[in-house]
Length: 494
Image (cartoon, rainbow, N blue to C red; front, side, top):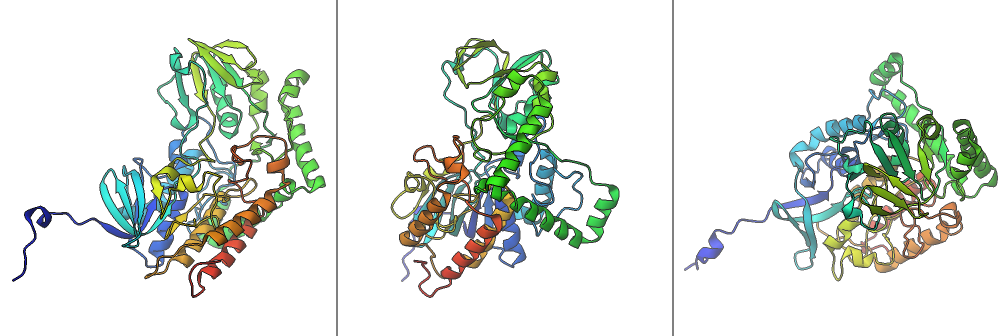
């Protein structure tokens, strides 16, 4: 006689299972989903915490938002777009591009589904994901959460008592009318360089709190002609040719970061010439001149940032904001500035990724594993975390070329590594060897010895954890070699 299940067990809802769980629906998540589906692997689910896809291009809607990599290069090689209107795309155009790309895998994307906890189940060799929509399991977990997802706001005394309006550039408040307002822009990085001139056009006054001056070079943008766009649509090989041309031109820029004296000097001279052309006042120009080597921080592109200081009477404060007193912003230099709005263009939590605390492998969380700085074999696999892949994570960024090339290199690595019937993982020895090699290559480069503090470097120990210290094509080659090791019979590279 077969024993019946207790009543409490007979109504248990099975936990949904997917072969590959992808967390994040930005470039990396959508790109991997497209490649999986086109290769015939349809058992995957994309979990996205927001109400729409697009990642950083969904979140950043501030005035002037645009990409600083040419559009045809800053797009997926297997999902080209002949309709880019300009050499450099505006933010909304990239967001629309990602929305269209996602349509092909839309049924497998779960929006408004933040993943709250991810735990490796050793007995069943699968990942357990707890989301707002319930529990799911997966054979493979891919973190495509990005590095620019969680805004950073510095610790400022009495900020909670500010009597005006404040927000981060990645959480733009479109209800705020800047006309006639006194505005503080905190930061002088990529977002600040784009949004400050737009605010200055309408505001009564803008005060920029600059912790360190950026190197800025001209933005060589133009519209594509109808004939060019028609050719791109008619002959996709023209896009391939243009992408190759743009890629190798960008690769030449790595020499400026790698210590080639003549290239570095030429790049520095170009930036300082651009500064001189945009700012006539020698005292203001001196305060806008960087005191570190070019490339140590991200080199920015803009034609209107420098002129805005003189054209609109923008005030430059060469210190960070330290405190707020009612409606007054106080700089670390003691200067006081009455403001109605504070815009934080202060970047993101990049070196210490917030999602890492919610991923638990065999013995520890990813945050604990990365306590000494982010690290991963092939910038993609982490020791102690079986069947886990991290896209756009440790040492997978670039300071001179397209991040999409790097993401595609990692996607190819993941596709090569995925194999049914085994719990693939990387050995601690392999991860350590990879990390030591990267640390050695980073030593003495402009990022570690250029005399600046940047988000590329982990402030806890000075390790370069965000950027790949080499050419972009070298990253792809290194990952191809690493993937070959995964095919060894033992499965764990050592």
